[in-house]
Amino acid sequence: MLGSAVRIVEVGPRDGLQNIKDVVPTATKIELIRRLAQTGLRTIEATSFVSPKWVPQLSDARDVMESMRSSVVQGDVSYPVLVPNMKGLEAAMALGVQEIGIFLSATDGFSGNNINCSVEESLVRARAVVDKARDQGIRVRGCVLP
Image 1 (tube, rainbow, N blue to C red):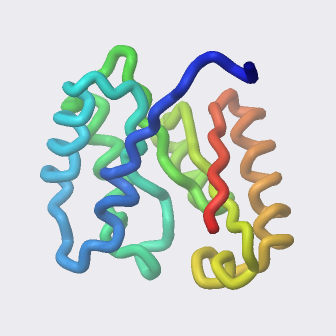
Image 2: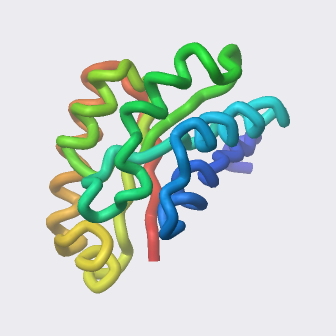
């Protein structure tokens, strides 16, 4: 059997909120993350460092991560963030993020709609992000989207 552990990554604070049209207040997002941590979850994807132009709901990523340092359950809980590119990684690194998620698409159509580039171009971008993150000792989780 390949690997004997399962890791559940809760993505609700990022993926679950990113498409809501009405802006969810930062304090509400932080409270959601706090409550999720109290359930015993050990990995909660808190936010994403994406362009506010494309995902306005996550324009408070910096505030969420700064506030979490003191107001969210710590200990054995990891709070990774999703980063689409080097700019996102640099923003996450400036806040001391210890784990990131990087995503790729399996199709050019979805990749073009999601991150404005082809699958081939996204692989080049992802490689640069992963290399820099690993050089900085940041854990990396990969995600493949349809």
